[in-house]
Length: 223
Image 1 (tube, rainbow, N blue to C red):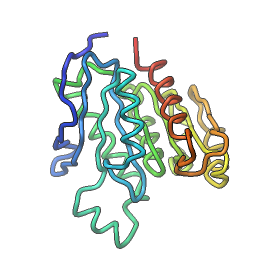
Image 2 (cartoon, helix red, strand yellow; image 1 turned 90 degrees about the vertical axis):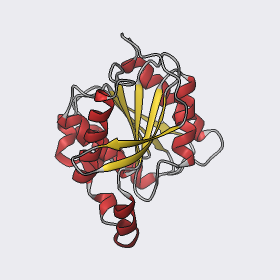
Image 3 (tube, one colour; image 1 turned 180 degrees about the vertical axis):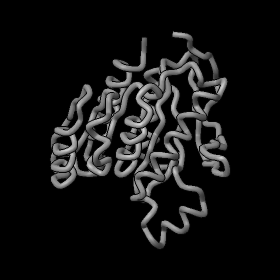
């Protein structure tokens, strides 16, 4: 694999995802990264989410670059704060994921890196829809407490290796993940973190999520 050596820690970027759409992103490139993981957060969250930042740090320590982005513009975030509609617009969110993926593939710093998606909540559905629509662009998907069920008919078209991680006490989301898991046709695995609730706030739960994600990405992104 042709890896891009770079050191560009915690840099804010304007990520162009459409003709007139630019998103705020934080790109972090360790030396000789083995791949890059695009974080696709869910409803009511942001690229500053401490949970995603913690997982991203573990992935960087494992040798991966990371890109954390906000899928909505500041104006859209303001609108969504009052209506709550855009956070469930999976088609819109998946288009933004595809746009960010294209940006990574065009960026000289990242164009040679295999891409993985780490999705949470509704972001997991957006990541799976993007993976279904562009199977050659992404090498692996991980969902943390996600809503893959919202990907609907796209689930049966996902060819990308997919890992679903759910807390055992997050009973409603666990049920939805099991349903979505049965519809996935590509390589797949579901990991249930014992004793964990939706946000994996229990001692050691999020660390377990990070390690499971790291192992999955190492398996499918690193040559």
